[in-house]
Image (cartoon, rainbow, N blue to C red):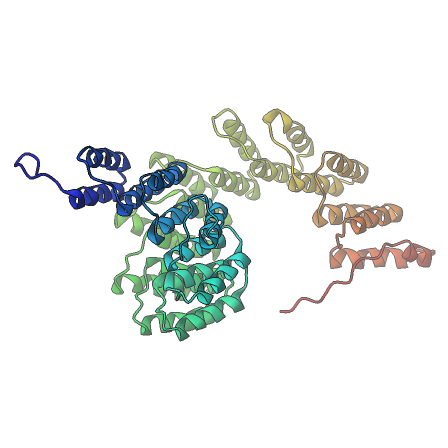
Length: 505
């Protein structure tokens, strides 16, 4: 335009600023802003809002907030779009509480900007979404009621955000009620809305209810996407209905949804959990033939499956293949590999592999060490397990309740109850609180040795921590005490535990 003598006007420059910011080139947007000032134009609220949006998209929230002050110094009045833009940016960058404070100040007219503004649905929707993602569902519900009280109709995005928040805190009944309200208000649910509800049902194994929701979704003309199919397949695999997961997988392409790596991983996982490893491997090959590259989850799942059916040699080959195909193993890979070797009577191989990891750049985790200690104990290599346990501090690892529980269990099985009890005291001194498993294991050990006083002592420790022994332990305790000649005295020495409510099936 400049080269042919056409001078860009104010509207043209505003459009250019907006385009630069939307493309993630806010720096160029500011270059155009300077050109706009040099040409003698006065920027308006649209100019500033575009630049604030650009800064927010780049996560430069502090600069966006300061630029809002600059806007006011230029004599421009921020409007509902400006504040909605800044609030959306604050929520996207986990500054929802700041956004909520700004909302309250602007609505009540006591903000530092000296502006009162009535929020719109986008403004409310951003804060509600941010609050739900941050776990502040009750506050989100308050804001939702405030929005409706102000005569602002919620849209599908706002309803979906709140429904998702309710599902995350396990309030299914209220989420369902809100969905019904959404339909009654004539708000058309989107694929995302249905996906949120389906995900909650499938995660809890309620596949018949999920299927009842899936049918109305199609009837309403809402096209399921790949994520929808993945949710349903994952749910079917979770409850062991692999055949139905397979049918969905096959039908995806005919419905215009191509399976992605997550789709394949879900079905591969379903096969492996049901020990159909050959099917899992064939599906992986099919995935590769279609140009979809397996990821670390694919390999981890297949390794798990191969170890379950005891084909250790194939698992080793797959681990090598993984690295040849330039897929970097992660913590879960190493954990699966060591656990698989231990459970298939290859504990020394697992130990050798562990030492290889020690000499690599990989940062060991306590989960991996726990797995190996457990394998060493179960294979009767007690001293090796002890040695590894005592070297944890050298590896900058802190033993957790699982580590101690494994050690206590191993010692009790060897008849070394006093050492196990000493480990319990050491555990408590170091601030690692024993759980029910730790105490139950120790009680079993003392029952085997017929040490009634120690059993009672451990039960008192449990009672102090409000921990209730397992039912099988209770029966064992009663059995050992009633056979004592002073059983009434023994029974009276037992601590009282809170009554447990019966669980509903």
